[in-house]
Structure formats: structure tokens, C-alpha cells
Amino acid sequence: MKNFKFKKLFSLALVFVLALSLVACGKNEKKEDDKSTGSETEGKQEINMMTWGGDFVPRDIISEFESETGIKVNYKEVNSNEEMQTLLETNPEQYDLAVVTDYMIDIMAKNGNLEKLNKESLPNFSNINPVYQGNYYDENNEYSIPYAVSTSLLLVNPKAVEELGAKPITSYGDLWQPELENKVVIVDWSVEVMGVVLKSLGYEYNETDPAIVQEAKDKLFELRKNIVRFETNTPENSLIDGEAVAGFMYSNQAVKGMEQNTDLEAVFPTEGMPIFIDSFVMSKGSPNKENAYKLLDYLLNPEVSAKISDKTKFTNANKAATEFLPEEFKNNPVLNLSDEVVNNTAFYINVADVTEEYDHIYSEFKMQ
Image (cartoon, rainbow, N blue to C red; front, side, top):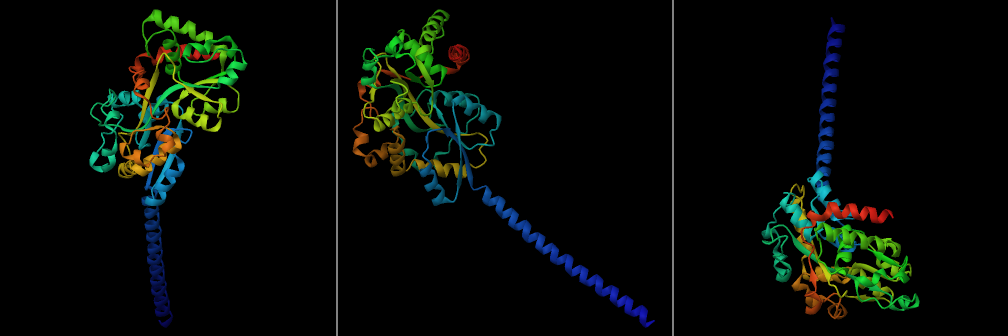
């Protein structure tokens, strides 16, 4: 009987110990769960951004934002507006922000890919110069924040051009000179390259008339032997290192090239130039909207905006930033365009109407 009682007491004690162990395990598991949940919450303190390469949105500026806010910015570099469009359409909830060119804002807004911006979350939006607002691609300023203004122009090494026996380059048409064989670099986009050809022939950008397009195609193919490189992000490097003596590129790239090689000069083509406004837009499916607004407003801060322009060499769309810009920036004719030059610029409009045909022609051209 005593033995039975002892066994019974022992069994009860064992059950009690096991129960305590289970409770302790449960508490530990809860703590681990809490830690895990906390990590997930902290992990959401981020922004997923798409932009151009070449430090288009300077990494050190982004690092300063991360240090001040604790919000991590995941920075994806892409090579074309069309790539950004595809990524936003395919995975709208994977990205928060993108920096796209004016014509693509028009396309994405019409396709329902973009979030209408809440201006109450952007107190610094009032710093944007009105001249860069209300354009054809976003007439009511609902979807975009102007970030960088640029033109496409020619960067030339006049001394090297002369040494090749070519005449001075003042226009797009001069790029066809036989002396420039394998000495021209050009941005890698069908619409831009076709635009150069069309302008050289006296036409407007994005012509759709079959006869004009065929004429431009024939003229384009004649240029192939002169192209040494197709390069969108850093075409100026080809002139800096002497690979090319002339190039068609964006104004900020030309400025960077001239800073590194004093033999280089910017040329405003007599036929005129395209003008671009690259802007921030927000994905309709943005998973981190609150954080995205914080970054946008941070970049609109006048002093931050001035730092960005000084680094990237883009014309600044932020009127409040002007007082913080270096004097050499303010006095640079490529960055602060004269009225005469601006009057000889134009947007690429209705890009979607020509992209497929131009891409096909351009693919043939590059394969020659």
C-alpha cells in the first residue's frame, strides 16, 4: 500500500515537473515569436526604389537619409524606362518609387500603374519651380515630382576631330563624316537615335509617316560604321579615355566629361535638342508608402537638392535650392540653359506610338 502511494506521488510529481517544463517552453517560444515579429516589423522600415545607373540618385545622399531615419533604401538600377514599366506592371507591390522620364509618366498614369501623390505628406513640394510643372505628361501634378532636368546634346573633342581630318562638329549631320569612322559614342535608345537622324534630315521627333521613317532608316544605317559604342549610363567615359571624339549624350554626362577632360566641349546642335524631366513616381501597389513619402520630402529639402545637383550635374527643378548651389554651377551654360537654347528644345511626345517600329529598326541597325 505504501509502495502504491509512493508510486502515485511520484507520478503526480513527474506530471507537475513536465507541466512546468511545458509552460517554460511556451514562454520561451513566445519570446522567440515576439523577437521574430519585431524583426519583421523592423524589416519593413525600408523603401524599394528603381532608378538609373551612374549614381543618378547619389548613394551618399541615400546613406544620409538612412542614418537620419533608420529607413533602408533598396536601390535597383535599370537601363531603360521600358524596363521600369515592365517591372512596375509585373510586380507593383515589389516597388515603392521609380525615377522615370516624362513620356513614361504619361504612359504609366494612363495604364493605372501610378499612385496619386498626397501633397499633405510632401510639405517641400512647394519648392518645385512652376516652370517644370503642369507639363503634358502630368498636367495636374498628380503623379510626379520633378527631380532632374536635362537635354541631350553633343560632347566633342575639337582637337581630336581636327586631327582626324574632319570638319568642326556643330550639328547632328556632322556625325556622318567618314573621317569619324569608329569614333562616335551614342546613347542606347531607339527613340533617341532615330530622333538624331530625323532632326538631321529636317524632320520632327517621333515621325510616323512611312516614307519619312524609311528615309530615316536608310540614313541611320549609313551611320553604323561610325559608332564605336552604344552606352546609356556613362557615354562620357569614351571621350575621356579617347575611345571616341564625339558623342550624343545627356547634358549631365557632358558636364562630367568636361570636368575630367578639359579638351572636351559641349555643342548645342543647330537642329535642336530634346529636353527631359526625370521625375519620381510612386507605384500603385507601393508597400511602404509612408517611408516613401519621407524620402521624397527629404530629397525636396533645398540644401539636399542642391547637393544632389552639384553631384549629378543635372539642371535643378527645385527653385528653393538655387541659393545653395555653387557659383560655377549657376554660371554653367549647359546646366543653366539660355532662353535661346531652351526655345530650340522639344519633348519626345507620343513615344508609345513609335516605340515598336523604332525598336525594330534599331535592332537591325545594331546588328549590322
